[in-house]
Length: 397
Ligand code: GLU
Image 1 (cartoon, helix red, strand yellow):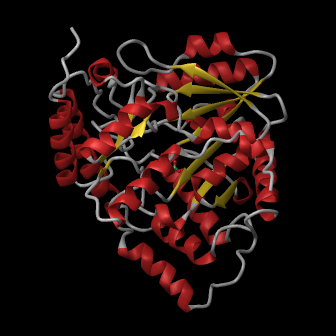
Image 2: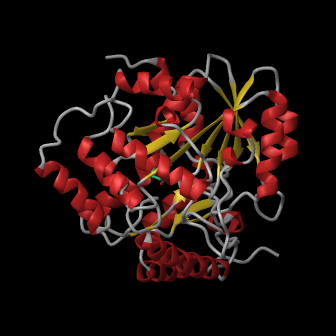
Image 3: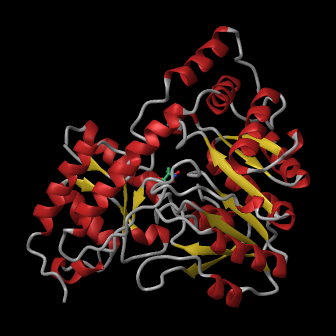
């Protein structure tokens, strides 16, 4: 049977493909060290699981009502935005979604018309361009590299805006780059958005995972104008180690959230009530578990970046947030005889049993993404294997 052109043109999620392939290899008895998946290795904290089992014991097994989210979960989300992000939303300006991914998808579906251009800084999270296309939009990737690393490409974005530009996606702390936009960067983005009347999708999934004493600035908190034009999305997956629960949330102007909720009522019907009560508990309970995981991620990230920089032909910035390093490995390509990040990742997996996500999936073929949501021991085993595998590489001058 023929599938739609829309889906024929859709790329599969590379992050999930790598994670699934790694899991399948492990299940078949192959000892792979996985740096692919962007999912915490920690289990969901017990008090959060207990909220779900309590809810199940009390028979919360019916449809979520309303589909946009249970009142108590919305209230917990409102409190989180107020407490941590300086953002004051009403109950009708927040909603609960099936992971942050669905929040992004619904926001783009609610905001884009066919032909609308979407500014997406590169590197970008793998699903942004595909989701923009599914909503009829035209992704406009904007290179963020400055020769050293990545920074917010304000001038390039301003130059790329056309009368068709409708929306800009901002993701900080960044997946896959591990970098964080400064407040000055965000203010430059806010100026562009105001000047050209753009909507903004602010993906702040990693807002609690910051390193080196950095603190998070929410884009929508910069000004009334930024607040009025932004949909902010976040999730339980990273902050509370809940990726498999598929729960995220969004906040923004009431008409946009209402449009997203209408879409949700015709598609998933919302998020399982017992999952919603687990997120509500996570958001209002003591936050020590978050700090514990953040500290762990910080030391792993520093260690991984240090070891990557010891490899020939590899350059890696120290991560500032999230749980990814995004090393530039192009210096190995000539010695290895590979033509880009896909071939690099394939050879690394088949020859050294280490899985990484090819940077091309994030718009950067000179890089690979390595998640450090895995134990220090696994990081060291993986890096030992990479060091042995890359030993014959001549460091380029
Ligand atoms: N966001 C995570 C990642 O980038 C989870 C997988 C996905 O949905 O892309 O690896």
